[in-house]
Image (cartoon, rainbow, N blue to C red):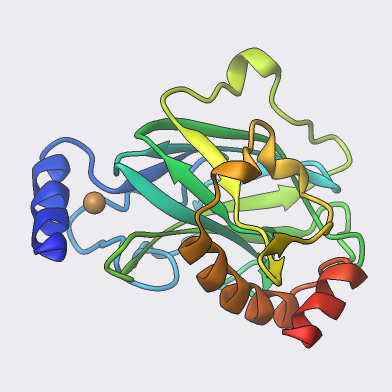
Length: 225
Ligand SMILES: [Cu+2]
């Protein structure tokens, strides 16, 4: 029933602009166009071409502005280094986000992990994954070029409206760990994290931590789990 309701919601919403979109950096292309589908991994079946839009991003990380259309969603952000269809194997959200409400969610600075060596002029792809209660994920990508000339968005161009966001924290014996929150969680309210979400977050985080580079504390925690 829930999935039916969700599907109906998606269909209704899709009459306007369904699912979600990346407002900044510019999306690779129109994932609402014929032949594209946000259900298709990794980038909604939007192909890269020589004319692919690329936005300059700071070497240490940049702004990400999402337009979310579902009542709530989990948000994961991944990075792939390279020009053509890089593997999106670097997690930028070791603590993924629980976003509630539809509207804009602007993250002023999504940080590149310190251990990831990003070079001036290097091309890369950002993949944003959103996940709802049915477990089916939605994908959109934005292609970027890292540049020492890149800058994060000014505050007036990076506003969150209608969406509240909390990071999904790892838990040990029912209490939150002290793993440092990423910079993507301004306005996060850990106390609103639900226990059930934290459990699935723990499992997902173990995988994310393995593939990505999180703080040593998080690594130790994932071993303990
Ligand atoms: Cu939808």
